[in-house]
Image (cartoon, rainbow, N blue to C red; front, side):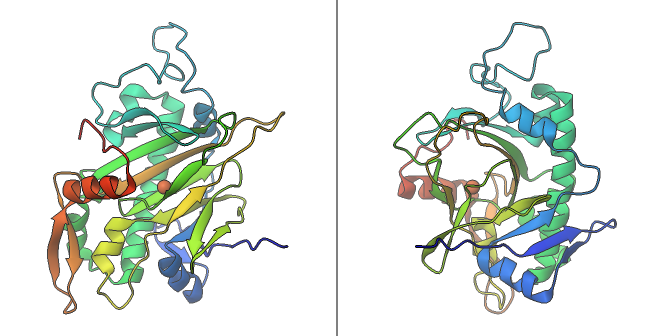
Length: 292
Ligand SMILES: [Fe+2]
């Protein structure tokens, strides 16, 4: 039996910050799948981010100014997110973009800021492709361009030693967009009712489109899919580190509304994003962030 694998459509951001899909077919398939690859920009070295995925959960050394380790017990009082030991294999650290400088090593913050700009450029390119007018975008995103929406990083350590549980359980992301950097295969998406392993495209990030995009565009001629994705259980592999991934996410703030275009193309308030998120958590059976 052969396992089908999926190659995602491809795109890059040019020097002017414009998203260019490899072809019109890649653009359309990206919205249909809710996922695509975007080239890592020339000069962006992601290794500090991947190294941080392998250290953030280690106990603090007690050195003043140590920010590479000790995040499991840190507390991150200024964050509404922070460290979480999930019921799947992942333990993760989530921090809002305005806290990166305070809590993260400088080399990691530099990588994330570059990824944040890339994610914003990609988001705007997808808005173009989906036909979302420029003048509506600040309202819809809460000011993603000014970084007044909700932007955070998620730093993931897949604990391959934990057996009988998924790597990361199937889910869609809640916001508009997530840019993912990882060092190993394992990512799968649900496509036409089947789970398909996605082939890694070297030198590229993976981009997921999420619920806020799906809701926004559902009645437009080119609706965007919120991609269902997962990572199956990973086995320890002597000689290689556990799977690492880190992401930059952009979505509405929890005090904002989700929006939706009606069939006439008018923008309407749909539901409070907090209510939407609490409802979604309830349906999926997990606890919503206690501090939000
Ligand atoms: Fe996700």
